[in-house]
Amino acid sequence: MQLQSSKKQIIFSSLLCFSAIVFPLTSPAITVQEVPNPRQNHTWVTDKANILSDSTETQLNQMIAELEAKNGSEIAVVTVPDTKPSATPKAFATQLFNFWGIGKKGTNNGVLLLISSGERRVQIKTGSGIQSILPDARVVGIIKTEITPRFKQQDFNGGTLAGTKALVNVLQTPIANVQSQNALPLAPIVQSQGVKPSPIPAESPVVKNSGSTGEQLRFFLSFLFIGWIIWLTRSSANSSSSSSSSSSDYSSSSDYSSSDSGGSFGGGDSGGDGGGGDW
Image (cartoon, rainbow, N blue to C red):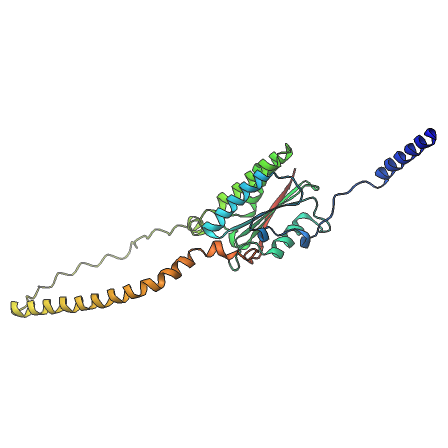
């Protein structure tokens, strides 16, 4: 009996080894619709590949939340085991970006940092509204210098934190300042050689006012009285409207923080491109 049971165990073990060789384990496929939206939990990170620690997720959420509260920019950090059945990780990133609507509607100031652990691929997708401060070349530079070197050392926490921090630092730059720096300087004005400057006309003689001093004083006092009446009228109108506008000013200052309170992103569209890299 013992001999028969040992034979059965050998046969069962052999079948398991044979099935593992013939039918190797594959990474689970995931679609864009199956990726949990982190905004439903009022966070910014989805770690489906289970490569990030709780401490790292906390730091990422804090950095991105502070950025969004400052100027409305949105960053989603997503890890997946694979991007199949999408054709490429880039196609998966584009579909996920638009499916969630990362970034504010109209401004398109969103960024998606996608990490596919099974394909050893990092993909960053950007919105069209931040192309001036985060062009594709700068995105690739962040991936090559901050993310993939750490990923090659299996430091997924350090690489994700460093890459996100670099993106936050760039997005904190005011777009208006960048555009002014890229503007061409005005050409200097060169005076024409053939035209001589016109002579300055002689001053006309000053005609003294022949009116009496008493009339001038009465005119001056009347002018001061009318100005005083206008000032009293405007100050009373401003004081009455200040109380009604204070509440609306307070609510408008929190537009960024309240825009995503419904459990979703702001409704942006990619429109831009980004970049990717392997490790």
